Image 1: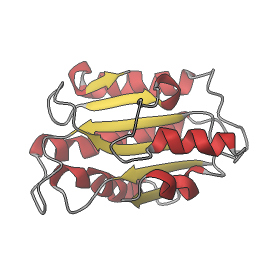
Image 2: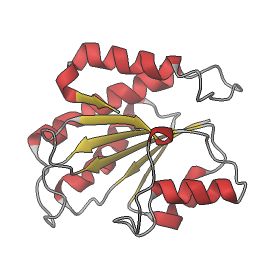
Image 3: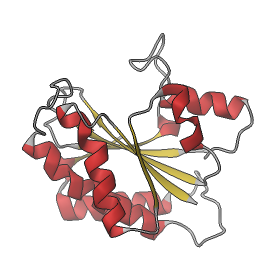
Length: 182
């Protein structure tokens, strides 16, 4: 089973991206398990269990790329930050704890993070470039869904052919400048 978990805060300008993306993805894939939440840390645990593949959609603010750029990465390529995370306990720490507790969580997670311009303005408008990334993320999710193995098969993190194919297809449509593959 594949789940798309869209995170953010619908009250904070570009941080509302996950909620808008969730609505767009639900319209395209009404049968898909799409969840939007402002939860963080251990509160995410219920969203992480009993699935084969998790795609997380969120905003990020690094200042290293233009707003609206999509970072595409897998959790297996990331390390938890030393010391407390900005959310006290973040997604990676929660996944690691779930694994330590032998809970049924995916071996790997695909993360789609859109570069934000402003995640702090209460009630602020979403930056146009960030808003335009909703279609880009929906396209990436569509390619991931279409590249997923047949029902009943488990996602194998070592056979990332479907994931690589999704990246190549979306990059061809949107251009290499819109995606940062990590």
